[in-house]
Image 1 (cartoon, rainbow, N blue to C red):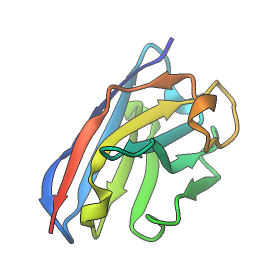
Image 2: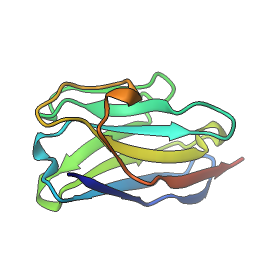
Image 3: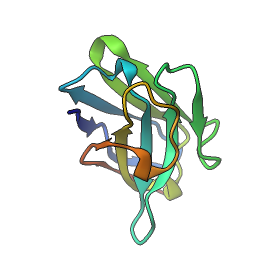
Length: 125
């Protein structure tokens, strides 16, 4: 069982940066494919970024390419989402998720096995 806890959300202005953290307990994240999703009010949850369990393959939603970066620190058992040049349309609850061990990069939320509780990101214009 993997327990995930997100942190780092907050209220920022357009153009600012934030770094979200997703810390795991129960298992090492070293062998899990990981992803970040977000859900804005009245909208469905959408894929933001993710990587293959090895960390060698990453993918991003078109809306965040060039601005967001997903990474993992194995020593801290933590996955990060660095968000730069934030826009009001990035406002959402952000969730991290883990797939099954040694799994591929996943973009479909239904393929993820473990979820955090979410952290709110609000970007004002």
